[in-house]
Length: 166
Image (tube, rainbow, N blue to C red; front, top):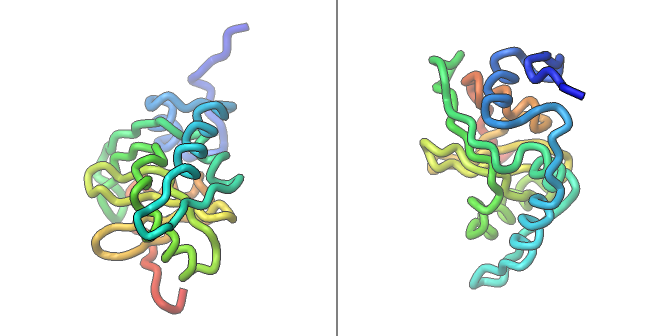
């Protein structure tokens, strides 16, 4: 049976869905085999100081659905420039301590999700599915779930800075 890839969902705003589909995403995309490969690689890595990555269902689900996508930036963005994204958790392989520190500050565990390629900012997800970005200027909250985070990044919505009170 032929499925029409141009049929829109109501899950994402039209420009976000277009960007995701152009990158290879479609509703129902689920590469659990690749997600498990990433999970094993992250679990098997230990930093020189003994830090290990957290791997949990919210991260594995995000990797299975969106992992491997390269999403180029397009358009001027609403508040900030849209980000070019590469959703590959191995960008965070050597960031175990940084992610552990963020998790401790947020009272949760955090796993790598990918990167904003232009700025080398690390994307991360917590056990509840909330998404963050970490860069040289600080830590930022992108959204309560991967959908909200991708929408913000692709459309250029300014993220909220995490503070000591957050």
